[in-house]
Image (tube, rainbow, N blue to C red; front, side, top):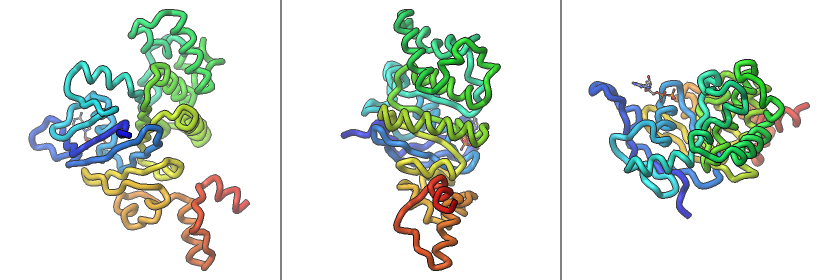
Length: 274
Ligand code: ADP
């Protein structure tokens, strides 16, 4: 089966002729239903990749294919963008409606979806993110986590096959972050939605199927989280710290207690040591 996202030999630099390459000949792919984390330092080009995949920017060289369709003409761009939902870092930048429901309906209105269908789609999307009870509230009155759940509803109401989260939890507290991850995990597992989650926080990558690590304009790692967490030098070179669970595991291994045969994430380790 063809991958849902296929990026081949992609290079990109912003307009300035003197600008250095943000992305230099990178290639990767995401399979349908995969949950992929894209990690890298601030300024390493993660958001640029999201914008390229969404067709908001065009690569100088290389190709991006969604469902085997290339970003070559405006017609294709529009078709491709329908398959992609994007949620950004700052929840306040994403609202256009006076109420939660009208905000989520916005994308459907743009596509002239009939009113009755629109109402039921908005209801389904808001229920999926646990925000149906807030449908008549003003978006500005919500907490940061609630705003991000509404932003996710606004993206999934258009039935995308791919959801790209660009640092979507980086402004949220731990509880709101956990709730967003639960919503996203459900979309991934129950609906087989492909997730590309962009982050500079290594702790939130543990539950993904695969990690792509971006450093110095290149993809320097593409594989399972449990393998990535063993690459201590590479992680240090990216100015990242090992996740808590990995530090703990390391401590046990150093003291002769071998738990390395089974991967546990932070939550499981907390339960295990309590
Ligand atoms: P990340 O998402 O990893 O923090 P970005 O993709 O936002 O990184 O940015 C990568 C680099 O490109 C940074 O050095 C940033 O300053 C630069 N950059 C981002 N947007 C623009 C732009 N519109 N014009 C010029 N340079 C930009």
